[in-house]
Image (cartoon, rainbow, N blue to C red; front, side):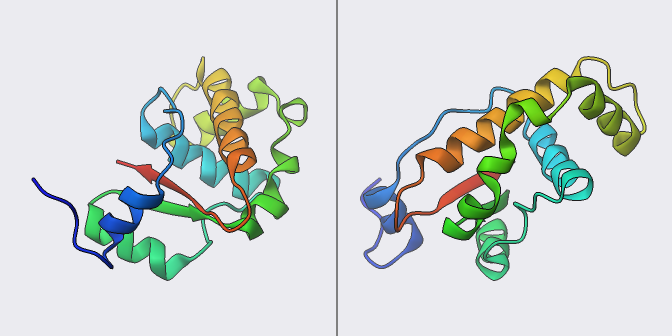
Length: 133
C-alpha cells in the first residue's frame, strides 16, 4: 500500500501516533457520556479545536474530538472518579436516551476512567484524538 504522502494528516499520524487503550464498549456510549459530562458537570471535552474536528470528522467518516493542553488542564482533575456516582450516571443516561439505564452507570464510570487516563497520558506539545465511529 505504500506510505502516506509527506505533509498529509496520515503521514503526521503515522510518524507521531501513539495508540491508547480501546474503550471496550460501543462508541455511542462515550458520545453520550461527553454530553452528560458537559450538561450535568460542566466538564466540556467536546469543543476543543472545533474546525479541525469538523474537518477530521468529514474526512474520516467518524466523529472526532481533539483534546489539547487546555482540556487536560481544565478537565483532568475534574474526572476524578469519587465525585461520580454510578446511580446518578445511570439515571442521567436513562433520561437522556429515554430508555432503561440499568447497568449503564458502571459503563459511564469506565468511560470517565478511560477519558481521564487519556488526558493523563498526554505530554507537553501533544494532543489526543478521540475517534467515535
